[in-house]
Image 1 (cartoon, rainbow, N blue to C red):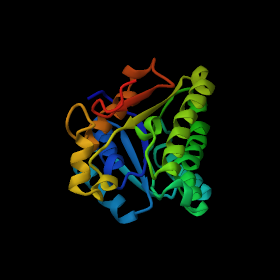
Image 2: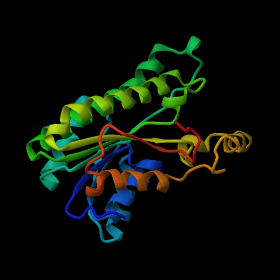
Image 3: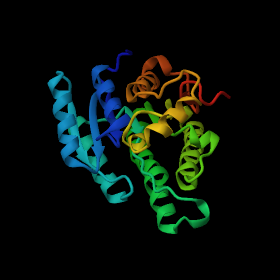
Length: 248
């Protein structure tokens, strides 16, 4: 893995799935990792696991849809570590349903967490990264933002918006030496896909050229790369981690 020694990272949605794997991978690469999510118990367990590997972790209970919680969470991280080098916007939820019958509440809830939440975190991160004239922001999008997916108009729109936000902030922050990229996972073994039936999972595999679903670790490896110095000349990019499912 690439070295992230002396770096400080914050991962949202870190309590499970891709976020959890990312926090572990960043710590293994040498970063001090702040893990944020709504589930304090799972965060504590993750922080303990990271510490057990001889690495440094700090748990922050945070709902990214709540602007005040985001502000206080980032403040706590900066008080703990004194800086922030890497932000991974991973927190996301689903409220699936056909567009014609989708409740506005389900639309708004997904947008608040998956898109507005990322924007709020980016604002807080930039406040310190701009002063340091350095930083890495990595937003977790989705293959469905590029392909569409029935029954997920809100989720797809939010993730597509996140790709647009990535590109906009990348252009704004380039002169400050802050890179902003996105990772777009395909179908990954995670709590979001665990609810699918075995029949549906097997059907999905037929659409993936590599013939398997990805693992959270597959995505985490891409995130570690984009967070590293080796990716310093990459910004505004969407890195697909999907087993060849979407070739463009």
